Image (cartoon, rainbow, N blue to C red; front, side):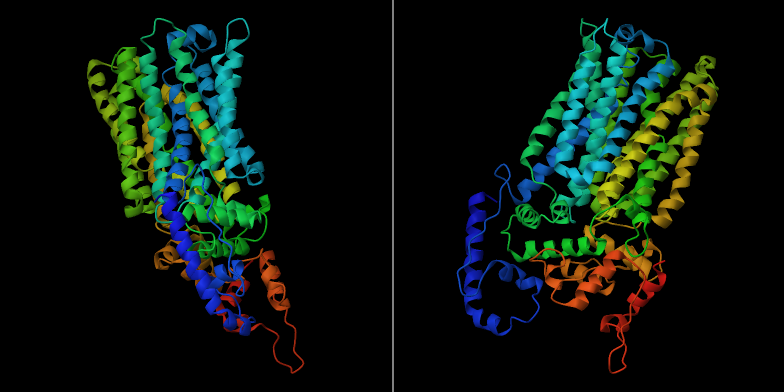
Amino acid sequence: MSVKSNTDAIDKYDGVANANDAANGGEKALNNDQPTTHENAAADSSDESTQPATKKHMRTYMGLTGRRLNIAISVVATNGFLLFGFDQGVMSGIITDPAFNDYFPATKDNSTVQGITTGIYEIGCLFGAVFILCFGEWLGRRRSCIIGGWVMILGVVIQVASMTGHMPFVQFMVGRTITGVGNGMNTSTIPTYQAECSKSSNRGLLICIEGATIAFGTMIAYWINYGSQFSDNPSVHWRWPIAFQIVFGLFLSVIMVFLPESPRWLLSRERYEEGESVLASLHGRDTHHPEVQQQKAVIMDSIRSAGKGASFSSLFTGGKSQHTRRMLVGSSAQLFQQIGGCNAVIYYLPVLLEESLGQTRKISLVVAAVNATCYAAFSTTSWFLIERVGRRNLFLWGTIGQCLAMVITFATLIPSGIKQEETTAEAKQAAKGGVFGLFLFIIVFGATWLPLPWLYPAEVNPIKTRGKANAISTCTNWLFNFVVVMVTPIMIANIGWATYLVFAIINACFLPVIFFFYPETQGRSLEEIDIIFAKGFVEDMSYVRASNELPMLDDKGVEDYARQYDLGFDTNFTTGPGEADKHSLKNFLTAKYRSLNVPLVVVIPRSDGSSGYPPELTSNPISSKAGANMA
C-alpha cells in the first residue's frame, strides 16, 4: 500500500469518525458517567463532540509503514544475525591456516592456544549479554542494537590492524573479545525487538528467518575463507575474511537509526504517545484507529499485570506471572542448543576430513563449505514449518534427529579407534559414514534447533522481565558455547568416537524436558502467553496442558481472560497507567495491592454488618484460589 492510499484511507476514516461524533454528541453529554470501552476509546481520547477532530496521521520511517515497515525491521534484524553467523564461522577456516599461524606463532601446532583464540570470542559475547542484562531496559531495544553494531566494527578494526612488532597476538585477542561484546549485545536484543514489533501470526516465521540467517552467515564465511586461499598475499588469507564483517556491521548500525523503537518498550517506559504512534505505523493505520487502540489496550493490560519496573529479584518470582519458570524454560532452550553438539560438529568436520580421510586442506575447505551450504539451505525449512508444525514438535523431532545422527557418527567411527593415528584403510572407509552422520546432524540442526532457541525465550517471557530474561538466556548460550568449544578437542583427543556417544545421550535427555515443560506458543500473541501461565497456576495444571486447552484468542478474548485471572485492572488507556482509576478509591487500592503481588486481602466491615469483600472477590473463586496459592 502506498503512502498516498494510506492517507486517503485515513481521511475517509476521520470523516466518518467526525460525523459519528457529531451525531452522538448529545448522547455522550447525557452519559458521560459511563465507563469508556475500547471500541470508543479512540474517539473519546482524541475528539470532542462539539468540535471537529484534528487529523492525526501516522508517522513514516524511511517513508514506510505497515507491512513494508515490518519487512524493513525484519531485514535489519536478520542482518544482525547474518553478522553473528559470519563471525562464528570465519575462524574455522583461519585458525589452522599456515599464513595465520606464521603471523601469530603462538597458535602454530598448539591446540590449546587455538582453542582460546576461538573461544575468547564467546567470552566477549557473554560480557555483551551481561551488559544488556544490566543496562538493556534503560537503553531500549533500538539503541542497544546500534551500539552493539558499532562495538563490533571497532573490534574488527582492531583485529585487522594487528601488525608485527606491536604485540599483534595480544591486539588480535583484544579485538576479537570486543567484537564478541558487540555481538552479545545484538543477540540479546534483536530477538526481543523483532518479537515486540511483530504480529502473532508471523512472529515465529520472522524470528526463524532471523535465526536461520546464522547459517547463511556461516556459509558466506566458509566460502570467503576458501576464496582467500588463492591470493598470493598471505596476509589476505586472514585479514580479508575478518574485515568483511564491517559490511554487515555498518548496515545494521546505520539503518537501525531510521527504524522505530519497540512499541511495547515505549509503553512500558510511560512514553505513551510515542508507543501509540509506533503501533499505528506498524499497523499502517491512524493512531486513533480501533485496531491500534485495541492492541495498545492489550499491551497496557500486560504491563499493568506485570507491575512497574523489572528488578533482578522480579526474575525469581512465581505466582500467576511465573517469571522464574519462564526464564528457566527459555534459558534451557539455549543451553540444549549448545550442549547438543552443534559446535562439536562444525569444528570437528575439517579435522575428520584432513586426518581420517587424508584430504588436502583446500579439499577439506571445499567440503566444509558444501556442508555449510547444506546447513544454510535446510535452515530455511523452519520458515515453512514453524507456524504449521509448532515450536514443541520442531523441538522434539529435531532432538530425535540429532540423537540419531550422533549414533550414526559414533558407530561408524568405532573402527578408527581412539586416536586418529591408529586408523587403518578400513577405518578410513568406515569414517565416511561419520561424515554422513555429521552432515545429517547439521541438516537437522539447521532446520530445527538453530532458530528455535532464539525465538522461544523472546516469546515465553513476559514484558516485565523479557529484556533481562532474554539476556540471561543469551548469557547461557555463550557460556556453554565457550565450554563446548574448549572441551570438545580434549574429548576427541582422549575418547575419540565416544565423544559422539556422549552427545547422543545428552540429546536423548532433552526429550522428557521438552515434552513435559515446553508449552506451545504457536500463533499466540505475547499477551496470550501470559494467560497460559496464569491459567496453569490458577487452575493447578501443567502449563503444557494449559496451552493445549486455552482456545486461540483475539484481543477482546485476551482482555476477558485477563479479567478472569485478575491480570488487568482497567480498560481505559487514554491516560497513563492508573490515572483513570484514581477517581475510584477501591479500584486504585485494588490495583496497588495487585501490583505488589502480596497474598493479602484486607476486609473492612460495613456499617450494616455485611462483608467488606469487593463483589468480584466473593464471586470469583479463581481470585480466592490464586491468593491461597500465591506463596
